[in-house]
Length: 400
Image (cartoon, rainbow, N blue to C red):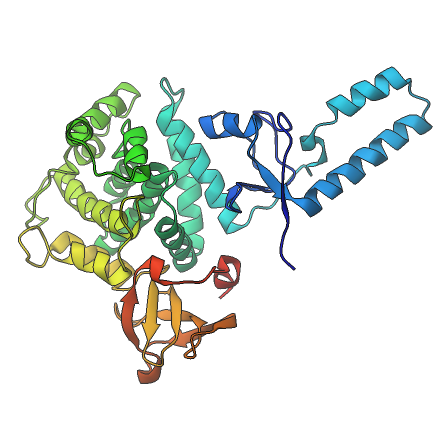
């Protein structure tokens, strides 16, 4: 049965409250999951003033709980004036259980919100400590379920241009950590790489988000403002206490590290070149309002060859890690089915695919795993995200 969304009255929410249910926008997009704390941000402040939607069933549950609370007060002979105060003070967060187990999508939504907030604070307190907490939480999920985590972030990044900068930073972190494993970087260099991945655009997030949301191409002023954002990000990181030289160099040079072998480079320059290719890959997978995202294979080709059209060592390390068809990308199979890659395979071009649309063109009732090593189930084409005309049940895919 379809879910009915209804608008929350103005001022029902408040900054700092813990949500007793999921919050959606008017189009049904999940904004905040049940159990999250509403941290102060422009989005949250706008939702306090109106524009948030909830499942009607959740609201009925709230009204029943409120009625039970008021009935109890009446039975206890509480004065009506105090009951009126209780009615006004009975907030939504009083219904929240003490501990809510978050699912993968809710957990990533929470991480996205916290990273968005941290990277935009003018004077962040304990920046390094908070960034490390976010990094560790993201990597814990990646290491526990690498393919499912990649699928979730790649797919959601390919569908959304809202919160582009924070979403891109999280995806870059995951890819950087996997590349670091593949290249067997030292623990110290791997940690610097992770930090640089999260903060390469530090201070430029609002500008990147505006670009992602505007229909027109970047203006000359916008291009000029972003031209030296690596230098500006490194300077800001130093101001908030980051002292790791490889980290700062990687951030400073992540748009300036040109092609060529990695071995002859210093640590920071090596990380900068790797970061440049991962940054490009993630950007190609993500849409903007002014352009559509590329297919997984097209994004892979963009990083496999360097600026001179030659095979690129840094790009090859990334493709060896995620494959030619990364989890979360859309493909068509030889038998005519269309699906989503949900697991990397034994080779870069033979992942496992969840078929979503049958050979007749009709949606399947449930995703069906396909092994692309088989001739009939081999990948025949890599599709751009907008070519999948289907609302995808990510929860079902995550169970595969």
